Length: 119
Image (cartoon, rainbow, N blue to C red):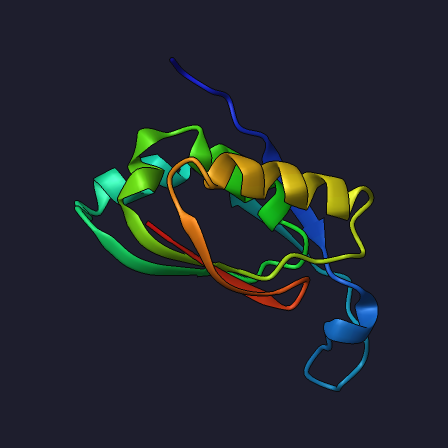
C-alpha cells in the first residue's frame, strides 16, 4: 500500500534566523517526509536497541505511524517525551501507550517528562 506524505514548508520565527549582520532574516525550509520504516529498510537496519523521541509534539504523529508497521516490534527500547502543549495530548498519549502495550512494557515513566517502553 502506498501512502502519499505531505510536503512540509516550515518558517522559522525571525528571532531565530539572523543574517551576517545579526539582523532578523526571513527563512523557510522545504523538507520531504519519508516513512520511518522505509528509511530503516533503506539503511538496512535489522535491529534497533534504542530510539529516543523528543520532537516537540511530533511524537503524536510519529508513534502511531511507527506502530502501524510491524517493524516497530523489533525496537528494543522506545524512550519518548510527550508534550502537553498539544491539544488533546493526554488523550492521545493514553491511546498511543495502550497500542504500544501490545508489544512493549513500561519500564519507567515520569509522565510528560520521559518514559521508557521495552519489548
